[in-house]
Image 1 (cartoon, rainbow, N blue to C red):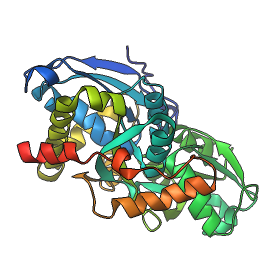
Image 2 (image 1 turned 30 degrees about the vertical axis):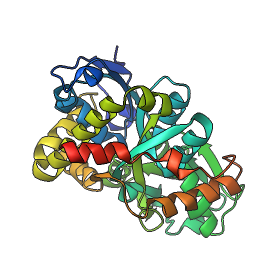
Image 3 (image 1 turned 90 degrees about the vertical axis):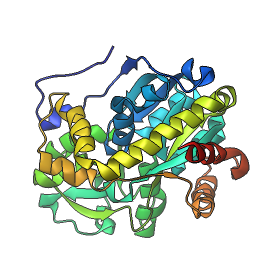
Length: 332
């Protein structure tokens, strides 16, 4: 059953999250994939919307896969569900992927998109704050434990000379932050699209920095190691569907925009199409394995190790499984 709240204004929506929706698969690519049910996790911000499009496009059913959806406010929650083996597949950025591999033997089967332009640090407009270092002594809403949360505290804030205790970190889901800014219970927020575009268009906040200059934020499609071991054909079929999604983003962007826009309007939330398109344009969908991926992950792993968030630097030959994407491309 899906939990929805209707009749919401913009800010009221931000407290709403999704639940489980089941879709039956049709067609087939072979007995192994046709009998496989994929428990798919995704976040209800813009990072999760390419996955939402995948789920609603019919492309998975075309590949003979059955799907269960698990929607949550942010990717680190999907990662935790996967560690607990409640979900098979999910998207999140590098730091959460590394944490998931360390805690639950999760593996990366592809980089789906780059979202560095979608993540921003914003401050309430009336405060006149223009620089990160001016957040000293301020209340900053942050999705603690998320990739954006870790990058903000470990890189962006630290780079501006702010250490733990120099600002008050207010733990909060990303989809609650604009409401908190409007209520003036926080002074700044670390959030992602579409919430930063909404705050900007509503005149609530100004952007101090986006993450792209610090991190392109590649978003991984991760899987539990046991799911991959038991369902290799289904993983390949699943990635073939993702290649179809990438093609739709490139060749039929209006169709993609309509499907994803319906996610927000379908929850009774009012957001202009112009605001939505501005937010969506900051997502770069291109499934694959970038050549510079391992050095990028090494950098994040060292930060996480230094801050004692993981026990060791991962063995990337075990953590990354590019062979499934190679097979998907060969069969496309």
